[in-house]
Image 1 (cartoon, helix red, strand yellow):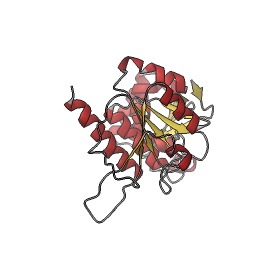
Image 2 (cartoon, rainbow, N blue to C red; image 1 turned 60 degrees about the horizontal axis):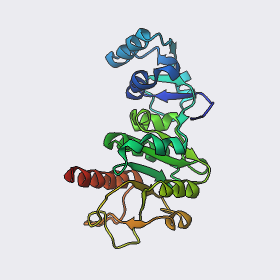
Image 3 (spheres, rainbow, N blue to C red; image 1 turned 45 degrees about the vertical axis):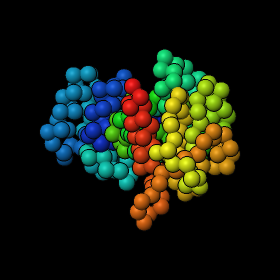
Length: 252
C-alpha cells in the first residue's frame, strides 16, 4: 500500500458522510462552519460524535483558506494521505473474478474534476481498479474526492512511475488492452468485450499518447450521431464502461 503522507481535506457534505462510513479510521477531525446549521450538517456531526471523531467549529474564511475555490458547503474532513494500492496487489486482489475483471488506466489526465467523475463512474459500475501515472497527472486530492462523491473509497487506485510498464504487467496477467481513440473505424458497439479488460483513457486534449497506444491490442471509438464529434473524457469513460457492462450482463 502506497500512502501519500500529506494530510488533506475532503470537502462537501456527501463526501464527508461517505468518508465517515467507509474510511473513518483515516479521519483526524471534521471542520464545520460555525455559521452553518443545516439538518444534513447536524446529521454528520452526530454521526462523527458516535464514532468519536472530533468536530471543530471554524469560521467560513478559514475553510475558504484551506480549500480555495472549492464549494465545501461549510464542512470538511481532515484526513491522512490517500492510500494507493500496489499494482501487483490491484491485479491479484481481483483474481477470483478472472475472465470478468475490468481495470482502467488513465493516460495523464490532469483535470481533477475529470478524475473525480471517472472514479464515481468506476464505483457505480463496479470497476475493479484504476491506474494513474505519478507524474503529469491529477492525483487523489480533496477536490477529486468531492467530485467522486465517495467513489474514491470504493475503487482501489494504483499510482505508478511508468504507465507503459504497468500496462505491460497487466497485459502479462492476461488482460485485453483496449484504448479509446477517434482515429479508428471500429466502434464500441461492434466489438465483443470478453475476458479481462484494461480500458485506457487518454489525456483531455491529446488523447492516448503514442507510446501507450502501441501497447493496445485494440482501439475503439464512440460513434457520433450529432454535430459534436468528441466527448469529455469522463463522459466517454461512462459510455464505454456502460457498454462493457451491458454486454456482460447479456451473457450471464
